[in-house]
Amino acid sequence: MRVLLIATYELGHQPLNLASPAAHLAQAGCDVSCLDLSVQPFDDTLAGEAHLVAFSTPMHTALQLALRAAERVRKLNPRCHICFYGLYAGLHAQQLLRRGIDFVVGGEFERGLAQLAHALQNGGPVPAEGVISHTHAGGVFLGRQSFLLPKRDLLPPLERYAHLLNDSRQSQVGYVEASRGCAHRCLHCPITPVYRGKLRLVPREVVLADIEQLVESGAEHITFGDPDFLNAVKHSAAVVDEMHRRHPALTFDFTAKI
Image (cartoon, rainbow, N blue to C red; front, side, top):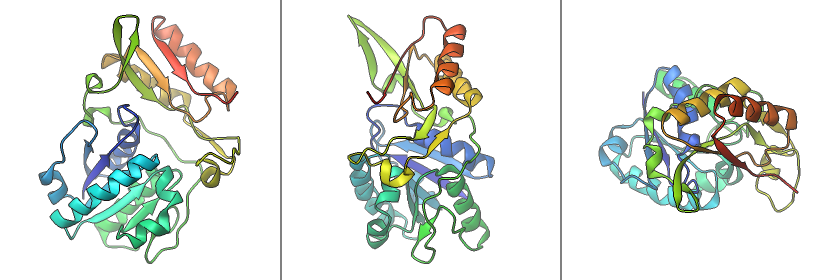
């Protein structure tokens, strides 16, 4: 099963939302490729040879750009299956199906993508949990799942992405997440209708191992992209404490509700 994961826009960060599911798909035996259209040209060969093309849609801009790219994929490869996954995919599942998208995976998406690829490869029924399609009502999966070390070797190098400018010095930036969802229920936030106040923690050892490989790739600063890094203070503090112990010069930033 050849799977192509595509990102269109992730705020200038190296797309974790490609690297994380790529690890799960590779573990499931898939031949996985990644394409980040924010820094790479569209690859007709990869799109034309894929059995499953899955678009990461963590935000509205990414969703709109992905719809355009999906049209191109469909013209190149009419027989492939097209899937949208991520926060905004779950929010717009029915609209996406009406636009010709075959599958939608919202919420916690790694397990659903791996199960979908396995089902398509073996010709069996598509699992309903976490996968929405024209024939499977499915639903957004918010249960606990395992996390693997993201396959960042399939992504463009950090030098292609946004840098931290401090005075006149530029530093390469790595992007990680220690948690998903949010304990808050802010009405203006797109996370609320999907996670409904639920929080999912990425195991500390996985986050730290990911930071290690980012540092080895040249990162001198880490951005924690959690919706609210202080949702689980003990977890977040443990990650930062150990990160600082290993790399005292490594700086970081995070987002929190105040």
